[in-house]
Length: 229
Image (tube, rainbow, N blue to C red; front, side):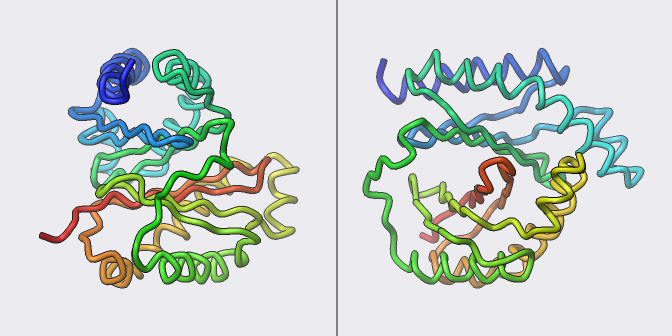
């Protein structure tokens, strides 16, 4: 099966899976397969109940509920991606921007060391600024690299960013609370630098997502881009 056909089939199947679990699927789904990465960008994905909670300033409740749903859904999502794309997904990340009713799923294949040519201008400046964000939030990463998968999708990988107090919180079972706190902190820091990233990349940034695999001490950041004409 060709990549474009796989992307379309994945979008259809993921939409159906989300409707089954959330009661409502996204209005649009954009799938990118760029080995070793698969990204799934969701737009207009908010149920009426979630919207009502957000209107009453209960965004945290929506985040906590979605995180609990994703605990069971993530393995099913990984299996679906494996079956359709033929690529074995070993890592899975997700995040939401509730204000935009958007979301992201990121799968990373077993061949994480595979290196296609995802280079792009000013990547050193982007990586350095992401490293500065990490330094403020926790510590500078031991390793950082970024790939532009297509004109609209940029992914940043960070490894080795957890500090000792975070590791202890994870050991004590506060992983969910730490995720929510880090999500708010890091996305706020990234948003403060939005214009700087747009200048480096010569784009408008439509969305920013971030998540972590605490066991691997690894994080993904995804920028959804709108290239300047």
